[in-house]
Image (cartoon, rainbow, N blue to C red; front, side, top):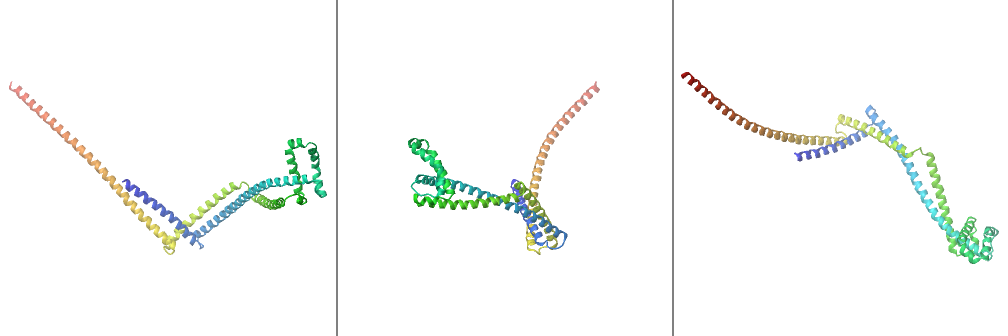
Length: 324
């Protein structure tokens, strides 16, 4: 019986699969044939339009959010690159500041560079006055001063005046830095502007709205599918196998009927087995009752025999009394 049950379960799953395919085919048939002015066809087309509207809203918001995420990711990468570039800038500025500071007096500087250096010259006098102490106590301060001076030189584009005092490699690095800074600055502005536009055009709580749109489109899709399935079933019943989809529908319906027949046959076999098992139980009950009846009949015979003996004794006693 357990084997039959497992076979029935397997056949039932096969039927469910055919029924799912059948619904899909009914829907495809309904969508393909909903072209006339009948109320059923117009309902399918109306549900389709409602679904397409909801789908478009969902896709538009999805695209906007994807753009926002993409821009945010790129913006973070640019900011990360700028942070790395900032370290390169500090190294370049420290070198430029040190070169300009150390070469002062040995090279002819423009008025602008001289004015840029002026605030830092007092430090040099103190350094010369107490060199040993200065080197020990103010090494970090000197490094910060070189960095600040280099930043001023780089900001004012005065590094070319130091060409005779520095290696060409340094100026190549400066040019590369300026190129990177320019490109990253433009990219940063581009992504930031795009993000601002997306923020301004975006609805409040976009992720919540996206979920609402998704629920609406799935609801509209279900309504469209159900209308198409109902219309497809109607068209199949009226027009038969004229459409290739209808031919497939017929095959699935036939197979479902066959599988249903197999299930019914196996269910009947299970019922027969159950009835046969009940018959065997009842036969056993009959045998048990028959045994009980045999035992009772023996008891009855014994009782009848005892009764007969007592009646005989009664007659004998009655006869003896009369003789006296």
